[in-house]
Image (cartoon, rainbow, N blue to C red; front, side, top):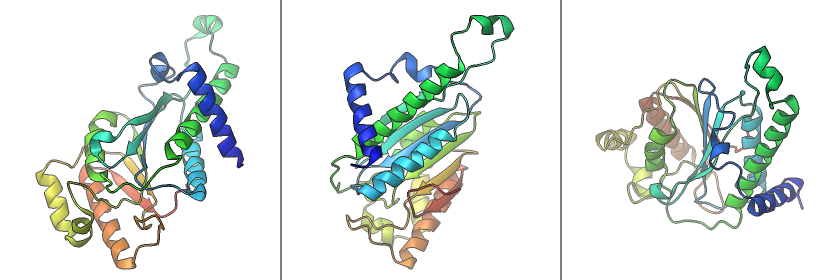
Length: 257
């Protein structure tokens, strides 16, 4: 059994036994209003094979390890309906704030506490990812556009640095826009439709990185034709430009330096 799977299974059992420490008080513990706000979207409408799971967990673990002290991390799902999207994780990166000399002497926050808390949160993230991607089945729809539009208002933090990561093939197929219309309609028409329906969220100044674009929406994950890939890149580049964000799109799930 791969090490990351065994570790995640152990952590999942631990959390189920003792409860989820990210709830309530723990959600806000260590948060800083001046640190970055980081949101990851995980598309669970298509099953992940073992290679994809390993790349996904490694990628999000690298995001976690690179976060600044006090940064907020939220992981949301993309599902067959926008209303089904839910938050898997919400936590902040542990650190000891500067409280001055006298308060520092009485503080219970130490370097050891921070190290242990960071380790615990990293395991918590891995366990949540493994639990969510385990035994998934192919869903008939993938409501990407309205999920982003609806969730943005909740997750976007005005006045802070916002970073969004999406792990998805980015192929829309929903009751709003069918897969056939998404692939055949001109991008001008699609973007115009979203603007008319007010589905262009405000992500002003945010950076968006997308992983998984170029893979087909079927279980075989065959690569898209170059024509379709170009069209897909163009749509999402224009979509995020309209939100006020900058975007990069890549095919692999793993992060590159």
